[in-house]
Length: 137
Image 1 (cartoon, rainbow, N blue to C red):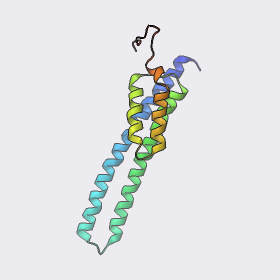
Image 2: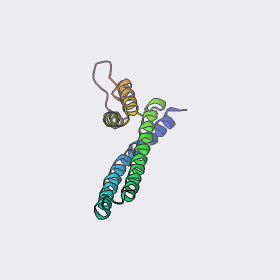
Image 3: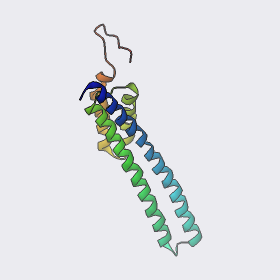
Image 4: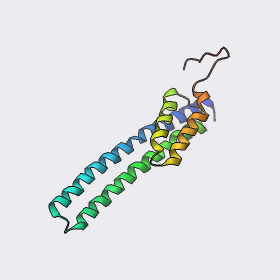
């Protein structure tokens, strides 16, 4: 694979993975809306009908899991973009660091993967010239 096609593929993978991180926010918004509806059901039906509450909570859990799953796939795509291609942009480095910290709580292996990829490849994102200065990107 030549460098230019590797760069283009890496850019596509990285940007797709970055956009997929929005699924976490969509899943969180769906969770808040769903839990609000679940407690409205509890308020109107009372404790006598737990099936309505459990059905609403089940719906919330599916939307949360789907959001996290899509975002996890996006995180892996960003890691693959760095490991398998020549795409190296500073925004991707910092995105990997931030996402690695964020993913550290819900799914520790994904967060650790992103942090490790960014930190092990940091010299490729910020090349240093022989005189000690960094080259412009």
